[in-house]
Length: 373
Ligand code: NAD
Image (cartoon, rainbow, N blue to C red; front, side, top):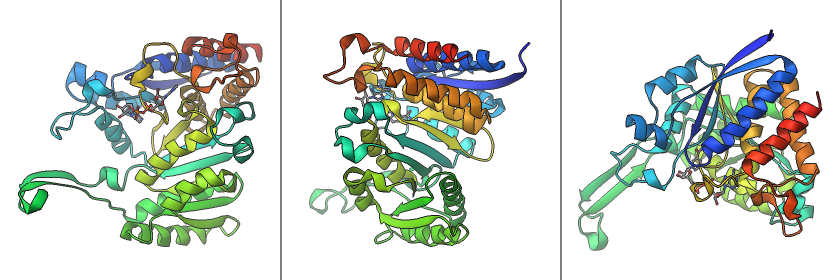
């Protein structure tokens, strides 16, 4: 008889999504067996596969399932098959943006941790990345991605040589309350970390940046023990490579956070290692930072660790199952410390017998959780 039961909405999506989701669900069930917890996982469509089946990237049935679940675990969406420049055609990303909006997921937490066992997997010097442990707190439902997007054909003077041409715009907007609530998340996170928040903006050029800075400092005043540093986004892009050890929590808006977190993945050695949590005031969503990696889909070579670590974040942040979450992260640590690698984090010096496929990496993690029993 299981003591606890949680409803999980599992959305594998496209590309490598189904392969890495399979691994994450196996890991979840393994940790569930250990702690007498039942994870009732129901799968649904999102992204390109939903467009194929239902004509839209976020079917109502998927949204209903997500709303009624205790947490949502997502793989990745998209791929060349659904790429289009026609603004009237559905795109896989609409599914993701729609889900974030409908669930009110305004806070995206993206930990970037450099594993001791993988310092050499980073293209940066080992001394520069050793010990790096950064939490990127990205605003997720405002800014450029959620402002008005418009393309107008045949505008006088918009073409070459003042001829008729196309005009496009994307509007970046922020309300004070949106900045305040994400800032508070960042300062709260810093209180249980190293006690430093670097707030990244473009206050020298953008009005949204100036409002960002003003509101962040107002929130900072409530946290006198937390150090606050302002940094312009272009400088931050450079500092992340030059001196990543200076960062603890990076607080930033939607678009900057999207770009900086991909850049920061280089510190860890691969996008395939980076998990994320998207939180609001209700059901939360957990997903890897990477996309659907169509170039390696179906080959059993994708790194499933970002998806597995997203499941661990779900256990900790979405379900308050801290012990179960630690079991998963400990198993990942142990497997990496034992030298097991997927192709993306293998090196010239890695013994070929230690390079595992997606499924086999999952089996190692499950075995490790079961051994700890
Ligand atoms: P991507 O993150 O899918 O891939 C970038 C590179 O990283 C590729 O070389 C890929 O093989 C590699 N990679 C990514 N995840 C990996 C993993 N787990 N293991 C090993 N290698 C991995 O980004 P992209 O190529 O720019 O985009 C591909 C598709 O994904 C596009 O359709 C894009 O719109 C979509 N996308 C989706 C999300 C999401 O679902 N959250 C995020 C970003 C991009």
